[in-house]
Length: 425
Image (cartoon, rainbow, N blue to C red; front, side, top):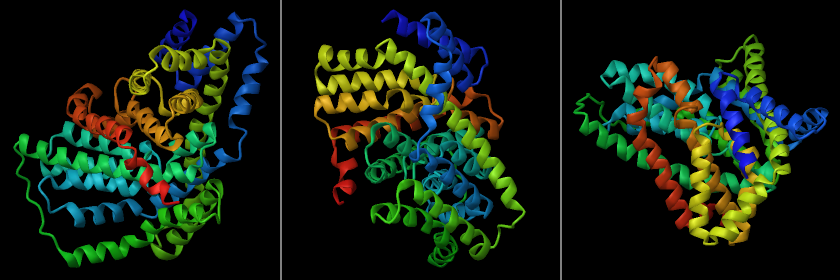
């Protein structure tokens, strides 16, 4: 068992030395393969095998579709719609930030893209209205959690790939928890608005303005409906729905919003290629390291300890959540899913939990690390946009982290929260 702790210690040492996550994973893998006298060509074989999948092709397709929609000024329309819905409430732009992230998640599925697009617009706007910078950054980072949960979710696609659970049911299972997080965060935003003594003027609710913004946003909001509808109806697979999303994005950009120009396509493909490369090299590197951990019986030791030693389904699950939470403070959610998804499935099955219910809860848990220091990617993006040191955003972010953890507990102890929509199938 000490060897496993040593693996993670070496991995964290590389990360804190400043190496990118994927390079830290590869260097750690090579170090231990040399120590275990394994051929180094196994690194290349395992890396290639980890990404050689038709299912994973959905990831670049959804990334391209999201970038097409972003270039088509979808962010402006989402923010305008959100403002017309909740901007009149006390806590105005904070509510708008949260609701816009929920809508954006239905189009992009990436928390980093959410933090970048929504934060780029609303952090400066919130500061201009009188919100403190640390709070504007905290709202943005906290609400960016909604994008990997609301379908189409890249995190759910990855979990489906590693566990062979139908992605359509994982998508549906993430809707209610996502809505729960949004409502809890909006409730806290209202409390914090009063606690900080803000008295920022808001506009009056206008049904005319709501109708106007909804009309202009309906084309964008159709994308998640088309994607989910196509998958659930059996017309397309999750991978094929990514192609469908690209086609619809091009139609929307060229003919509906008319903001997309042919010259924009080169930049969109370039940005999408960079994002895809980062995701895929991380998945590939994690696959190689996972092979080392399998040889050290990491997954089987975790399974044995949780199921046989702890034994109790609730206590075992809470322990697993704690392990994921601690690892998530240092590892990207993509790494956690690739490393732990099969183990999570095995533990859930051993305890008799529904695999969809257990999987959705654990995928959400694996995303929490993205908004916690010291390696939280969503938090880093939000702080970079706000030009704020990460330590100054941490304290106001804690309540938003707690809203996610509370939703996880609710979803775990009340399975219907997750299973209501999948059961409709």
